[in-house]
Length: 582
Figure 1 (tube, one colour):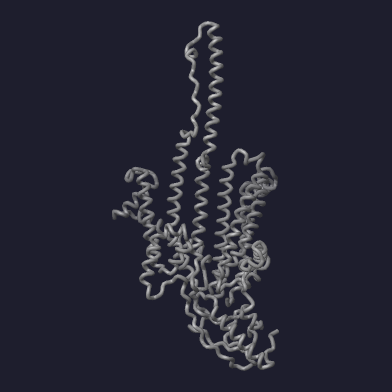
Figure 2 (tube, rainbow, N blue to C red):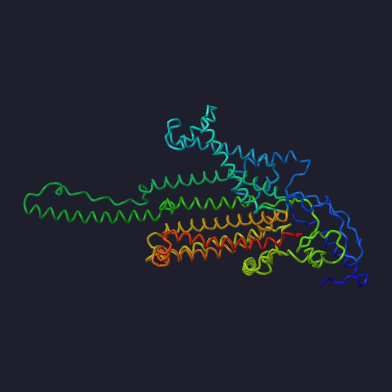
């Protein structure tokens, strides 16, 4: 029931000032709109204060909505100097991105998209030319190669030397370049929710595409580092058979009497005795040599002892580090650039400009609730200093899964906090641990004996790679889910809801931990039944399908259900943030 403000003049005047201040704050903190749907003028329209029933409330003077200057941005008089500095940073970005991604991206966040595209074209050309140079150098045969790389080199050589190209060659080159650009656009769409702020949707996409263009040389540097590490591993493996820290035992010489052929029975007896002695000496030599080799082998680093596992593990670690660097660049702080819009009701979206009564005329909610003063205080994770990290994490994860609409009322869509990213980091770490433990559980349940006894290093490498792969897949699924839900909800409300959808998806990343545990359980059950059970065997006779195909379809069906549940929870949480004023 709306509060009665028609009593004493002092109470009425106090309520009038309070409502006016709340309205001005809401107008100054308005959330983004993708096309200026309900934006009015460049300044906030006058908002009538809550009065005693009159049609004209106290007028609020227009409030300026100048976009704040980003921290570290150059003043107008120093634009030329700042441009030179940014260009210098851009030249060093392939290296500085790996060491300080946030610093590099924040210094280049204001660069024009055209300049970043030119940088992308320049670096792409260098990458292709470098690939041609190295492959032709290693192959030693530029014009007479017979492999696919040599054929690709010949086509690029023809393009560089402006030779006549056939229609098929032109089509192949166009297909390669078009696929390259399309892949970059898809990557920009995937990371777009991670760095979205209160701005137009096109601005969020331009920022994501600018980040992709900036990040492009970093994987090349990672590949070079991986190549150097691989070269060191190969050189160490090639030299490990000849490098003994101690002097290896020498083989005993063969007695000269064993080289001839005995003639008499006595000579045969002596020959047999000497042969038995020599055989014992050789066995002792082999045992000593094996002990020396094992001591030397144990002193070698793990990558030298297990080179194949080391290479694969390094590749997965490099991919994880590259994804972390890319998201750090996409999540740099940027000033909001959305046009102003009038304050709306948090429940129905009604325009509350010139509010006369202390309630929303459309849904009847009180003005204090409708203007959102009591909402968007932040998730429990944002108050973890007072609540404790463990309690705040559990409260936020449970709230995201059981009450997504309540969580949607707490997150800030117009002025989002970056603390949800730390929640995602903790959830991804827990997802990695849960995936590894689930994989170990599945192996121990499904295998006979102890599978880790003889192949421990190989198993450890497989666990690390499998855990990183599943964690990155879960992160990509959350990003895509936030993109789809944010675009769909934003299309219905004509606003950019990507900041809200990404925050809610980030706080729902605890769902990935449950997904990893549940996936390990049903994967174990399916594999064990395929190996020893009778469920899929009976289904094979009934449906006429291969049991392994049925097991795979069952696995995909269960994962599809998990994804649909996550999308539903994310949709419910994002929808309540569609009219958010802050």
